Structures are given as C-alpha cells and as structure tokens.
Length: 388
Image 1 (cartoon, rainbow, N blue to C red):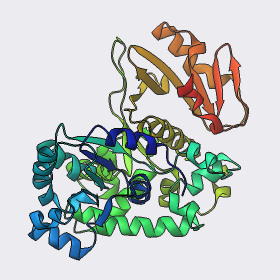
Image 2: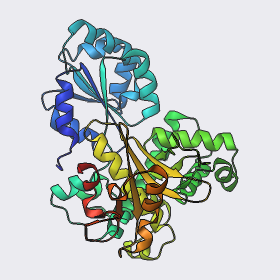
Image 3: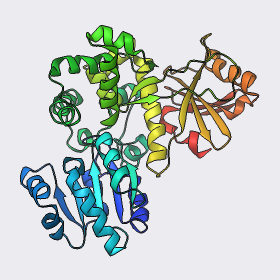
Image 4: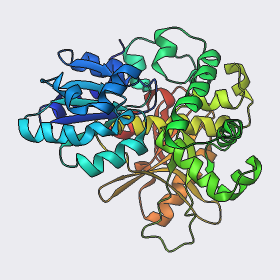
C-alpha cells in the first residue's frame, strides 16, 4: 500500500470524534486507507445489494450487528442509517465508533448537516499526491508523464495503462454516480458535457457558452456542473476580489481534480501528444492546483485557494490566503525560465504593495531558484510553496 498523508490525521480525529467521515472521488483509495488505519473495525460495503437492503429495511437490526461500531463504506447509499447512528453515538459517548466513507459530497453533506452536526469530523481524500508517490518510490520522468498518467492509485498499484483505466472509470462514473444524484436520461449528452468541461480546464467558467456547445440550457449546465463538483470530478477555483478597487473578474475558473482524467476526456493517447497540445498549460495548472488542494486536505485543513484577474487581463493564477497573508503563485508549464514568468508577480507587487520575493513561480522545469523577483519552484518540489 502507498502510505497516505491523511492516515495520521484520521487517527488523531478518531481519538476525539465519535464519527469520522472520509469523502472523495471513487477509486481515490478511501477503502484501502480506512481498512489500514482501523484494522480492528468491522468493514461493511453498502454498495453490496444484500448489505444495503438489510440497512434500509431494518436499520436498528443492521447496526446492532456491530456493537463496537464499524467502517460503513459508501454510506450515501443508505441515508436511513444516519438518525440511528446519531442515537448510538450519543448513547455511547465515546470517540471513534463509526468510520463513514462516501464518494458523493452532495448526498453526504446534506444528510450529515441535518443529523450528525457536531458529532462528525469530515475529511477529504483525493487521488495520490506527488508527495505520496515519490515517498513510495515511484519515479516520474517529466510533467507530461504526470499529466497523461494522472494520480489515481490503481493505475500505479495494478500497472494499468491510463487510457484503458480512465475509459472504464468514466463509463462507471456515469452509470453509477450520475443516476444516484440526478435522473439524467440522456447519458450521451452528459458524457459530451464532461468532455467539453475538460476542454475548458483552466478557463473562466461560462455556463451559457458551455450549454450552447452541448445543446442544453444554461440552468441544466449549472446543474450538471454541480453534479461534477459533488462527485469530486471538478472544482471551481474562485476569484479573490476583497480590498481591491479595480474592476475584477468574479466568475470562477473550472479545473479537474486529476489531470489524467482530463487528458483522457480530451482524447490524449500518449504523453508525447502533450508536448504540443494546445491545452498543456491548462492541464499543468490543473495538476499544480490539485496538488495544492491535496497538501492542505491531507493535513485536515481547508485549502483557501483563489485566483486574481482584472478586466485588463492582469492575472495571478493562485492566491493562497492564510489569515491576513496573501501569497501569489504563478503557474507556468514551460521548462525554461524567462522574464515573462515574472510579469504577474511584479504586477501583484505593484497593486498589493507586497514584496515580489514573497511570491512563487511553479514551472515545468527541474531547477529551484531563489530570485529577487520571486522564488522559482520545480514541479517536483511543489510542497516548498507551503513549507516556506
């Protein structure tokens, strides 16, 4: 097993909260992680029809079979259990009773907020981080290899070709999760919608344009974006516009949580194709931003990541907010450092009255340098952004 950074945080939380919830996309490693972290706990998959039927028709009897608590996998399939779980943990009044996992944020959050508020610690497990992959001894030769392969654990664990694994993953996701959230009749149109979203990764979200290109209404496009968010396929990178007088862009950008999934949806069949692909920059941004999310989430912290852009096209790809401190991060897929890399940081210094050297540039090259205009960080050493 590739050891996950979230492991220690789960142990800590289980000593303080009666219920631990681990949410994240399918195949991100949630089941493997909870079985490893809590080996003494009984494990029940609620994806299995017989377990699910028992839990739905006789929730008291089902939970009584696990007097010491249990790992309940894909708990969103049986919302009937939540009220009974609440009664049990309130009666026992001890930490670490139930470990819940789920791959649907919308269904889980809605139920948890209604029945388990104050009793549950919610964590998020995304696919592997580059940090976890390197610590496990895997070698990645180039950012193009990473953008093509992605970071889902099974690709590395089972040595599956990315193009084969993602094709099956997309089909499974559409057939299982989409039907759970919303009864979408035309799955072919929804699949085309996901591919159109992949073609926009790293761009400002324009729901009208997206809907028109897919042949659906603005409201349907908005609803389907919410479905992709809830299933941890995409995230919306929100703009930062506090304390600035200029006219700023206030629409979010759309990004995929995994660059390999986005590459597959774009029809990319080899890492060599990425050398000249028109969306290589957007995919590289996808990788960097998802890694910054993982660093914080793996430590039980909220990411607080934004971007900044005015109506003249001046832009900072990522603003990290930490208390009253704002740290700018520019993301460049190029492998050769040039003066254009620093334009965003210098403009930020001017309008935010900050020292440029407090900013970072993450790029597709190998060297890491401290420069007067900002620190240049190789894609291999992304953690430096947070560690410093």
